[in-house]
Length: 112
Image (cartoon, rainbow, N blue to C red):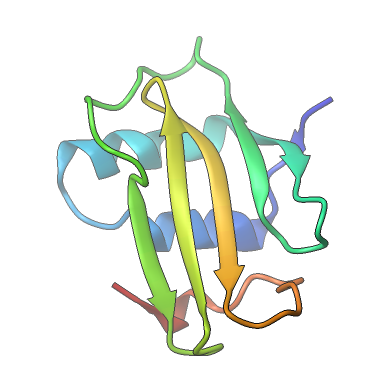
């Protein structure tokens, strides 16, 4: 059963999907209708996403990841958002470290 998107994940998505381009705008509009469908097994904060498709249209055709960026802090981490069929499907954090990142870094540290 899907659960609500955390405030930290919501803030991270909004920071990644800045801009006035049609894809970012459409994906931002999906955020209020997005829930967490699953979590990564390694213990990091990566989440599988599901969007209530009855509430919002898909984003225009685009590549994956739909958005990606590095963090300034922690400096060995990055974040990506993926879509499936024009809908948000995965918010992934990754690190060069062997330790999983267990909390979303502050969006102010995202460097695009």
